[in-house]
Amino acid sequence: MDFKLSKEQQDIVQAAREFARKEFREVALEFDRTETFDLSLWKKACDLGFVGVFIDDQYGGAGYGFLEHCLITEEFWAEDPGIGQAILATTFGSELLQLFGTEKQKGTVLPGLTSGELILGTAITEPDAGSDVTGACTSAVKKGDQWVINGSKMFITNGTLAQYVLVFALTDPENPSRHNRHSFILVPTDQPGFQATKIHGKLGIRASDTAELAFSDVQAPLENLIGTEGDGFHQLMAFFNRTRLHISAQAVGLARGALEESIRHTKKRHQYGVPLASFQATQFKLAEMATRIRASRNLYYEAAWLMDQGKVDHGLIAMAKWFAGEMAVRCADEAVQMHGGYGYIDEYKVQRLYRDCKILEIYEGTKEVEKLIVARSILGL
Ligand SMILES: Cc1cc2nc3c(=O)[nH]c(=O)nc-3n(C[C@H](O)[C@H](O)[C@H](O)COP(=O)(O)OP(=O)(O)OC[C@H]3O[C@@H](n4cnc5c(N)ncnc54)[C@H](O)[C@@H]3O)c2cc1C
Image (tube, rainbow, N blue to C red; front, side, top):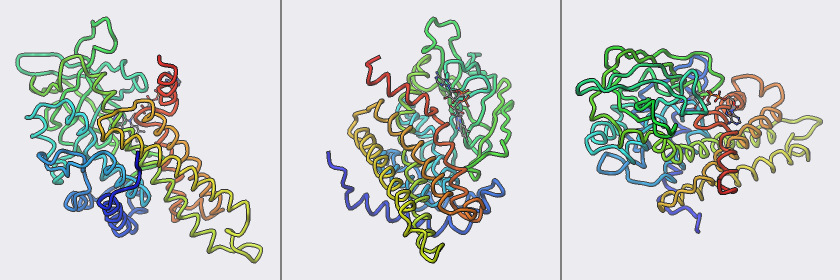
């Protein structure tokens, strides 16, 4: 296995880094404070080809692999996690559509995601069903040529912005297997009975939109069912294998941002007549951060590389996600520590990173859930 990036991949990294440095730095603090985002930045990223690079070229993507998407993700998150999420999560669900959607469904949604005309959301979590997704009770019932959807969804990324939402709905509540009761349905959000309410007061990634969704007799054509009825849970596991890779890359990016800020600060700031970086205690912190980042990056490189060879390693992906998430939380904490009081103020980027990092241990499978997956894979359960 060779993890040396190709010239083309190195060029992608360079271009993503330059774009993020040029476009994010000036606006990151304002978006964080005001919980807002300027969609023109997303459109710019689409125009430059950074969004949805893993989408097939026939649907407007670059036809690259997940590794290339992860490389862009790492660069965007190293500069600012909130903006990185606001831009790159606009395709959240396209992985599922690519795997299981019909030609018509893919043709309707995917081209708009890369051209900057459409935003997608994926709604699984509910007020009473989080880690245990099989507890989701939003229902979809067939009536004539339509699905009729009722229920509510919680914490949905892009909820107030998306033109389409992939809804994880209960379609066969009587099925004896909890793993065959749900299906995904592609729901246009301009339907009567759909309501999205923005959630305010998030700890971090505040430029990214998160919403609560309500469905009251919302209709979607029967042909908007994704794949086979009752396959939703299995589709979700395959989907998470892709998106959890992205989260590992988010974590590595965030931790790298924390390290870069810490190196800059500890070289510049003097105490006791010398730079902070000359204290061995500081050097140990920097050394540990750099090593943990590299170990986490190698995990996601390997998992993404295997994925792009068509070899999905469920246990390795779960390892990469929890390890990188926990690593990022630790690095952000050390970064604030090395900044002293300045690290406590939001004008210093590390304060934002300290708040932004926590989500990495929560969404798309908490770290506890990821460890359960790792354990099952090594125990062969
Ligand atoms: C900013 C943000 C964006 C999000 N975006 C989306 C989105 O776009 N779409 C979507 O569907 N959801 C989204 N989510 C929801 C997210 O995926 C869930 O919050 C997450 O899966 C955890 O579910 P929960 O919050 O209900 O916590 P719970 O499941 O109630 O978990 C609470 C605690 O209990 C622990 N726990 C639960 N079960 C076990 C177990 N078996 N063993 C050990 N510990 C356990 C968990 O690890 C956790 O520590 C988002 C959340 C946030 C905060």
